[in-house]
Image 1: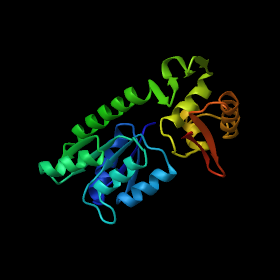
Image 2: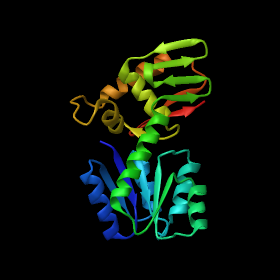
Image 3: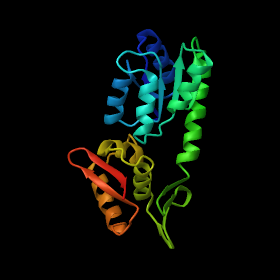
Image 4: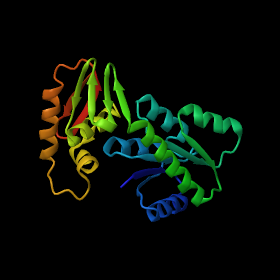
Length: 223
């Protein structure tokens, strides 16, 4: 199930957005400012972010700017009362993907969320490139120079998910949910086994490596 993070300091509005999105089949996490949003992103994976601009502690501009500076490409929809062109321009310059001005039509919000998720899927779920290494989603194949390595589905999906967000730490449970599904009876040791196989396959790869974060999970880093 796709998961959305809502950063909005107006509790009633935040609850409205959450209610509508849950009704349309999304899982939602709510926070009240940009700092709390960054903390949520450190501990969980989200498919899309909805953010206000004017928030206490850390506003939406700073939040999105820090997000992009860290290499996180999660789609962001800004929803704000600031309707001047310069405000919209600042939103896009900070790294937001779409922009809505309050008061909004929640049905339009749902449509925009769906469009952003489809766009991200088209970009992220077809091909990833790290240096001279290419991960081709359609064939579950990793191409390293002149060599091609067709992978078992689960191994490829694990590597692809982590390679889509270099430097981002994924917990074992997040990887289980993403690759095996929420209803899987497998335990998280399965992730360790598949990671071990990937390391064996690509131990000589000069473009990336899989790093273990002790007690947490794994991440792919560029070499």
